[in-house]
Image 1 (cartoon, rainbow, N blue to C red):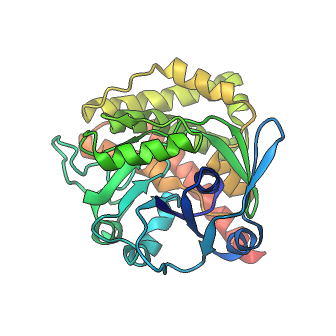
Image 2: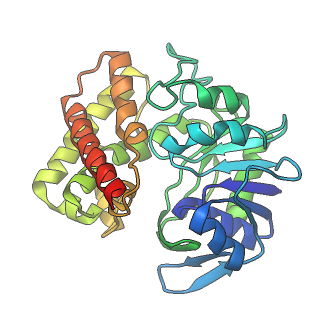
Length: 330
């Protein structure tokens, strides 16, 4: 298969490198320093045991121009970056292209073929002008959840900390041929991948943790272990997750994990910095709307009171504003 990976951050780089090493034709769309680094030497992946491999046979470009449409496009950009490139991304898509959505938090396509009361609803916090919806055909999108913990050490260099689960699922819960093919390719590349028939409940498990741990991590500049071991922040995370569980219940989603299990799982990851903290430290814009703001929209949609989520959204939004102002001054 010909895979096109859009975005060469920690997860996009890890997936691109592994797919290439397993024999697939991989093109990475990257820009700036990432493009230059990958073009000159490929993508290096450093494993937790210190061993490393370099995927040097993949192709890279800094333009949304390919000689032909790929079999599968993996959108590994941060959620707030998708709208700005959606029109360019549309030029790579033909009627047979499979598009894998690989974002943290609640995805833009969440209510496509959801089958409930809000089927077809567009999340304004994620796609305010409908740019994504009008350029990326929802009928060709399948969801995925990236559970590996990884950090981009430098352009073209990825440190894989732990985890290899990369499940996928159709929005309508079907076991399609395209989902099966992608899951098989992911599995052959060294990930634990399978086709889920209830992708949304699994999205909630990951998003649940992101909602609580990402903003707390950024606000306190603490790792997952530190948040989970400090009683007050552990309790705050649990309270935030309880509010999110209420939203899920109103949407008919059964989160098949207890709050304590989710917190313990995060604690076991150890001294890992969340993506939001990594963005703060590198003066990048944080993923506030997909990780936090989308939950406020869902709460409003379902008339669910969420005072803690509202408060943490306000705090981290101000932090991000200050961070971006400082970045422009330096």
